[in-house]
Length: 189
Image (cartoon, rainbow, N blue to C red; front, side, top):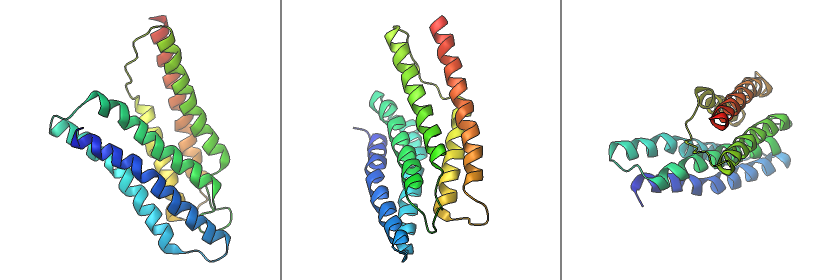
């Protein structure tokens, strides 16, 4: 296994660490005595894990460590971190009652990923070669989703987390449409 792939595996291993810290913090909030150090640890683990996404890709390219395993596991690690963050922060209050990601946002994010995975499965069933190439809307979608997660975790209380979620939801839906259109073009071949 390459060093780049080990970085990716480390990102996956940090996901449950983040979840435990986030839920522990959420329980302290629910009990009326928030332990802020748990919030900062959860945020730190999440940011560190997210930053490894760029690092593993750079290491793979710089040191000629690109591999089929790395290409396969990297998007899984990305989705595991992002979906876990979205689901976790939509289920627990983060520092104040109601300060969380809206459930509708979590539903849109999950639905998008299910649509993309379903589309890939359909293409494979039709014996189409599927080269997964990120669309620019997908990249902006990921950035805006991460921004919404950060908004909740950092608790910018002047503006409700609903607003960054609306922006992220727009790009989430837009990227879904773009990927559906790509899939239709591949099917028409």
